Amino acid sequence: MRNIRFKLLILAGLAGLFLSQCQVAQRMAILNCRYSLLNVVPSRVGLTSMDLKLSIQIDNPNPMDVILDRIGFDLFVNGSRVGSGDIRQQRTIPAGGTEIIEPIVKISYLRSGISIVKAIRNKEAYYEIRGRASYLVGRRLFTFPVKITSGNLY
Image 1 (tube, helix red, strand yellow):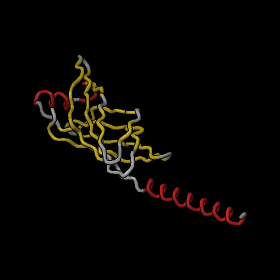
Image 2 (image 1 turned 90 degrees about the horizontal axis):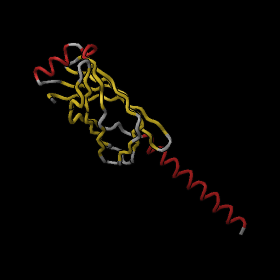
Image 3 (image 1 turned 180 degrees about the vertical axis):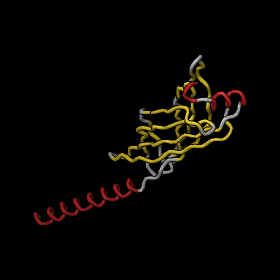
Image 4 (image 1 turned 135 degrees about the vertical axis):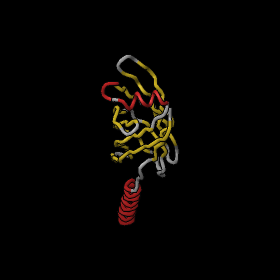
């Protein structure tokens, strides 16, 4: 009887080890999420600066939920860097699902140069976002590059 219990205990331990290794292998195969810039809207316009509200859609192609831990980025308008953003609010993106984040970027007219003036005057702008996103899956943190380009959004 004691021998059977010992064998069952070893078998249960091996099964647990096998299942945990499968979970680790699944976590290692995480893919970068896909990003789309849906909209850019001025949310506040002042004498020396303006705030732009960005709507970014994040699609999770993974078979498991991921938690967006952080995304840091630079914003380019018509090829010129005009501002940066850093989002540190955790958002769960379900497996195969979509989430929309809406960061606000402060843009100084002096720092952004003529690119913002041209975009406002011509009502035409080409936006690009470059940065890095960090995702939590289980207890592991994965960091991926982010590059979003968008045509004429204004």
